[in-house]
Amino acid sequence: MTGRAIKDEYVDVGKVRFIYRHFAFISRESVWAGEAVECADEQGRFWDYHDTLFENWTGNEGGYSYDNLLKFAGNLGLDSGQFATCMTERRYLDRVRGDSDYAESIGVTSTPTVFINGEIVRGADYAIFKEAIDAALAAAGR
Image (tube, rainbow, N blue to C red):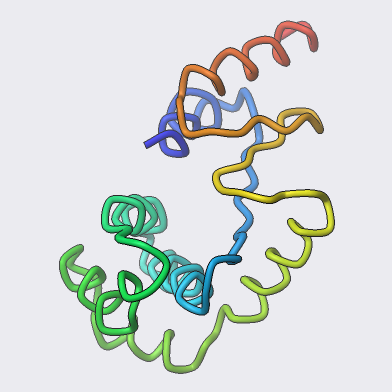
């Protein structure tokens, strides 16, 4: 997926800094999905769970039900008890809501939306992001 490719090619080698923020705007299930990916991150599986969410998106309601989110965690081999406790405690609700409020305040209207040096780049095609990142790096003399 695009986020993982950016991480692999640019972040992991120290070329760019990547900050992931949630934008849960579709339904309450969007909020749950944001919380779930953070719970997966507790077990070092942020990107695996993130990719699973996008691969299993079936619409605005039902796809990210609590039961499905637990099932995704189990399918990835996460500690189901730890994951369920994290979800039940809603450990990351404030983070997901805060990220979403911030995104809305700066004009984000869809996902994915990426800012590269303050400029919005929208879409999911890696080539678009690669071109924008490479141009920003060249402009910075890197």
